[in-house]
Amino acid sequence: MTTLIVTRSSDSEAPLAVARALEARGERAYRFDTDLFPTHLRLSLDEGGGGRLAGPEGVLDLAEIDAVWYRRSATGARIPQELDPQLRHPSVEESRRVVFGMLAALGVFQLDALEQVRRAEHKPLQLELARALGLEVPRTVTTNDPEAVHAFAERCPAGVVTKMMSSFAVYDERGQEQVVFTTPLDPGDLEDLEGLDLCPMTFQERIAKALELRVTVVGDRVMAAAIDSQALPGAREDWRREGMALIDAWQPYTLPEPVRVRVLRLMDALGLNYGAFDFIVTPEGRHVFLEVNPAGEFMWLAQRPGLPIAEALADVLAGRAARRWGPRPITGAVAGDARSWG
Image 1 (cartoon, rainbow, N blue to C red):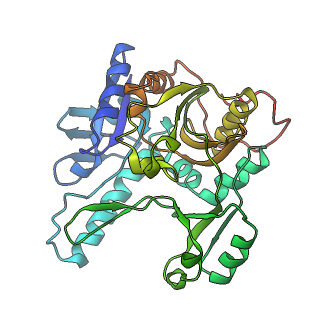
Image 2: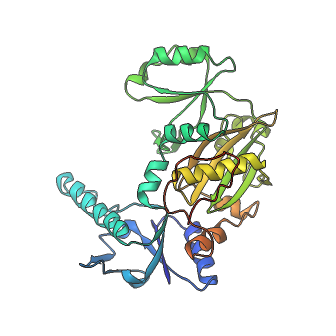
């Protein structure tokens, strides 16, 4: 029994932790660093669904794979940058198609299948499903129209924050990484929105915070941790701005049962076995859903609050815990049993 861990060379701690947990359960873990393909790793796909991988971890017959943990992809990253772009681009694209085609053809359980991850990444879909399931979500508008932003701001007396749907960073003239965080808008910002004609943005009502939560779901296990993001001025709008300063301050947190049930039902609707949720807890105790990342990081929560996330992943991959095999429609009472998978 072998689990294929699909990731990249720079991804160190999480794959190692899950591989160790799988091995403790008598399973083999084979690491596939996608950035090594096609330059440093060989992959053959044979007719009839057979094939083999050959790389730093040895040779793996694809028929031995019974589960896949899809975590990261950087296929073709080591194809030389100086190669003519007319040649490099199709080389990267062909390599990606081979890797993703292999995953699609394996016919085994995947945590999570690429098509489920890509669908679940859509933030508008997340918000609509969460709202339909009874989770509280912020008032939100995504637009490239300044007039729509002005009208939205008038409906948000507590203020407005802006964020991006995708995670990315820009680099200053010194080469230092500048991450784009959630940012509050002041009246001057609202008067200077000309850049929207080049890039749409998401705007949400500003919500008062008592705590911020990271809720990690693996199969039917819901593991929550809380941070007092208001303890540091720089973290009050987005705790990630002071992530390292707050790293030891995360504490285990118990979600109210109605919220826990709705979180699991959202996982059902998205067809995910893994999800990293972000919530705000308001001073009045309301739990406000922000988003779910289908491939979010978790190792800091395993090391500090001690959440057994790697072990939970190993249990699902090894078939020792319940698995979701695809999205489920939203049906039945919201407070009902959320475990609707096989």
